[in-house]
Image (cartoon, rainbow, N blue to C red; front, side):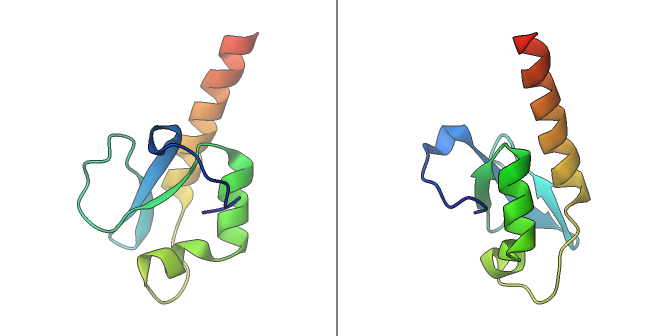
Length: 84
C-alpha cells in the first residue's frame, strides 16, 4: 500500500478496520476487507501520507492508525535487536 512494491503475501502485514481504527491482523483471520503493507515504518508512513487506508477500505475520512503503527514499530525493534 505505502511503497507499492510487490511482495509475497507472507512478507506483508494485513490490516483491517475495527471500530474506525486500522488494526494489524498478522494471522490474517480477522473479518472484513484487508489491506496489505510491508512491516516497515517507511511503508506505513507513505500509506498514511497518501491517504491510502480510507481508499483501500472504501471509507470516508481519515482512520486512526495508532495500533497499526505501534505493531509495526514493535516488529522493527525486534528485528533490530536480532541484528545487534
